[in-house]
Image 1 (cartoon, rainbow, N blue to C red):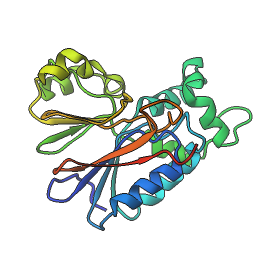
Image 2 (cartoon, rainbow, N blue to C red):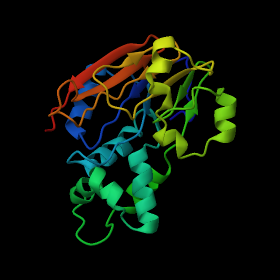
Image 3 (tube, helix red, strand yellow):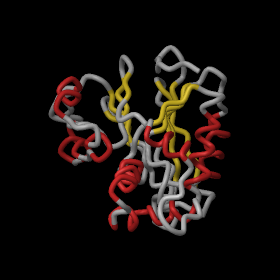
Image 4 (cartoon, helix red, strand yellow):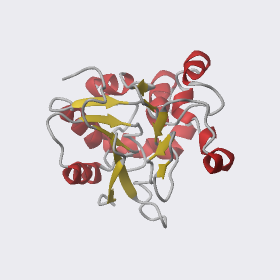
Length: 231
């Protein structure tokens, strides 16, 4: 498959999945994927939902059929940090325990090596001529070049500054490209000239106004969603 993302073909960005395998599969059915489509997954494949293992297995299979690009989410980052330093209470309390349960882990991290390698290979950011992709986001007061120079890789997983009302209301962003991100659950996708945010809280199906898995087709900015069918 192509190893470079291009705007000459459809780009389909997918929001935070969080172990909701059947919902992800349903969304891809609704999108009606074409062989030339390029899929950009914005991170947070694991944790909270009940089938992190199934989601990772499915994504690994999907990349054999389509051009797929996988970004590092803050939950993938917390998992990798826990591999190195031991499971942190922060990660376990924020969905890590559900991931370990999906893998049947009793003691320690009995995660298949291929799955570890997959998660470790995720990108922190990705860009094309007109779009910049990151799980969390980038600093709205800096150009993309300055973000790339000054930010640490893990910063792209956690950033939320760009979603403050002072920026949203004025569409005041210093970067020239359009940021496409997930990470922060909201009732509906944000569609601004320089910002597209599509985490609509798929895993939070019991929370009013959340519980949708969203995607956006670029460059036309068509949003396709499905409600959570895993819970």
